[in-house]
Image (cartoon, rainbow, N blue to C red; front, side, top):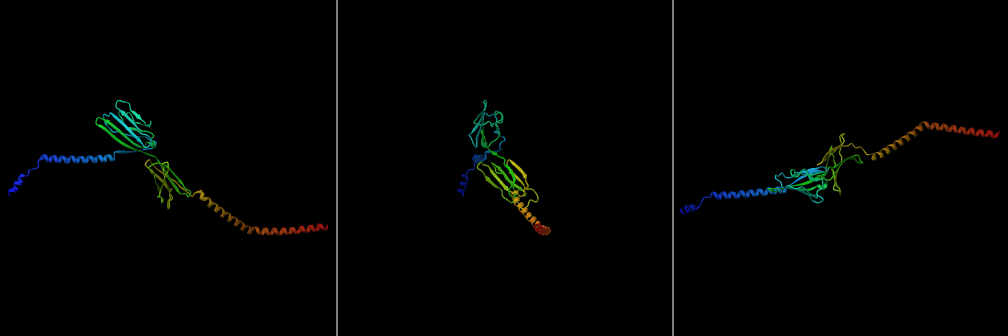
Length: 290
C-alpha cells in the first residue's frame, strides 16, 4: 500500500508549457501539409489555357502588382523562335525577335497586357509574364490555342442523297441531321493537318421535310437545309427505256391502223394496176395491126 502511494506521489502533472509546445508542433506540421498540397495543386493547374480564332486578335493580361520595376513577356510559340518583350522602369521598352503583330496593348508602364493581332497558327504556344517589384518575382503562364472555323459544304450525291461536309484544322467539327440520319459520320485526316468530317443523310422517311444539316464547332454553329432529287445521270436510262417503249407501241399501232384502213386500199390499187396493164397490152396489139 505504501509502495503504490509512493509511486503515485512520484508522478508529476503535465506542464502547460509542454502541452502548448506539442500543440504548436502539430499546428506547424498541419500547415506544412496544407501548404504543400496547395502548392502541388497550383503547380498542376498553373497554366491558364486561352483560345482565339484564326485571323482575330487576343489579349493576355499580366499580374496586377504595384510598384513594378520590371515586366517581361517570354513567348515560346509552336513554330519559329522565341521572342520577348521587356519593360524596365525608367527605361524604354524593348522587343526581341517579336513580329509587329505581337506588342504591348498600351503603355507598359501602366498596362502590362500583351496583344496579338491577326493570329496565325504559328502563334500557338506558351506565354509567360514575369513581374518584379519590391516583394519579389511573380509569374503567370498561358497556353494559347488557335481555333480554325470549319468550311461547310452541303450537296447531293449521285444517288440523290444529301451530303454534309465540314473541314477544319482542329478541333474536328460535329455534324447533326434533322430528321435524324441512320449513317455514322466519317472523319478523314489529311497531310496538311486538316480533318474533314463527312456525313451522308440516310433515313427511312423525311416526312416531307428537307433534311437539315447542323455543323457544331467551337468557332461555328451553322445550319443549312437542302432538297435532293434523283440524279439526271440515273434518269437518262429511265427516259431512254420509256422512249423506246413508246416507239414500239407507236409502231404496233401504225401497223394495226394500216391493217384496218390501208390494206383494202392497197389491194384495190393492185387490181387497178392489173387493169391498166391489160389495157396497155391491148393498145400495143392494136397498134401492131395497124
